[in-house]
Image (cartoon, rainbow, N blue to C red):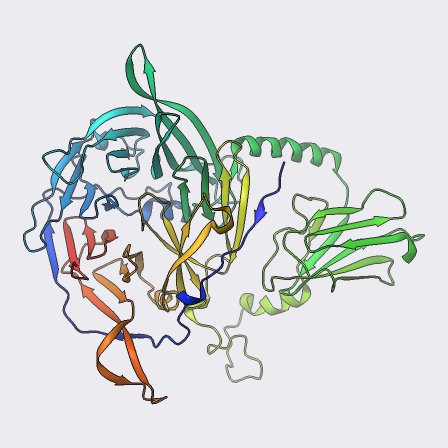
Length: 582
């Protein structure tokens, strides 16, 4: 089995602005139009048994407003009557009421164990839809947004087990056969998980293809693949060709078949190694890793051979098989790595990390013969976090926390995430990126023919990345930068959704209630302006705008186009004009 290629994200320097001046609050009015809904949005509240963070991320923070990226003047939502409603904008000042384009055949309210209905637009004429009860619909729509030619017709529907939401879908043609691949997301009870949340996350990759039977063309499921993980992915998308899948998540995903094989291997290893002590112990700091191996009394320095390379390590005693050998979790500076024999007849090996600050979850990939121990120095550093005293004397010599060094935007819920590409045939990871502290912010569709982009925090900025699965040498391209957005969004404690214009002209975020913040890209000034500190002329300014909605209901949906923002509450749809059309 080939090892996954370790990759990195390369930011384009030309897209970075190191001398960004910050956002200037603009008081210019924003045109905001409101539209009352005939029937409220079909919001599904979390049940008492859906109490984990994963349930909240997947379903509690779900975006109920769906933007048709193939026709950006069209948004859709599902109301409490089970109707898919469409708002098609032709003129902001003359908005028509949302119209019904499709009605779900089943009565949703009759099902107790249901999720929110979910929609995805894989092409300009196809829609994948889940009613939230476990049934998947494939619908042919005609030209969307045009009431004369738009007709939603079900070509496939099937019950697929427990309720799910549609995370992503693509439409493609191979060898003359049309197929639609759909990614279904579930959070399921895990009876074997007694130490964690008690749930696992399932991604089911379903491919529906057009079949010809006795001259009749119909769509059927031709393949199913299942991956499991322990956290809801930040980003999960199928490649346009249907040949691969990309997942950005805090905890790794593996195919069910791999899981079963690993369980068998672990059971065998557990039986073989029962009552055996670890072969080695290891601990780490931000800069290095220290390995300790107990060696027999008769072993001398000449009997020990330690081989270092940037990615691997091998330790042998005399002519015996290697005591430890394999690929390290991350790269090391092999020329600076050392080893010594301690007085207590133990071998101590020091590895110098190339990526300083990266915490290793394991020493050697797949090796279970060692045991990680907490470093004493690290324990001392963390001791103040569990102290019973809340720093009663802040003026003492070494206070446990320096508020000037720590800021809100430096605190992440999760230390790091990983971006993986899975091969569609084998479900093996082919490419992997450890994102470290590059916090995930949001996803956006810039070009509907390409995969969705994802936005990551890099230092104080937010960088937008476009996946290119057909370009292995440049699989993730840095296409835009939103200056200081990584820093700014961290101060918004009540933020719910983030988005950006497909042409990168602005980014936006909304809070749970009422307020929407818009951050425009720097634009040239019509008047002369000077920096008061440096005395130099400022050529352009970035503006922050704030819109306050006239509604007290929570915001349920949020979408951005080049010209406007759509904001959805239970009973109202708001349009905020951000840019004027060309």
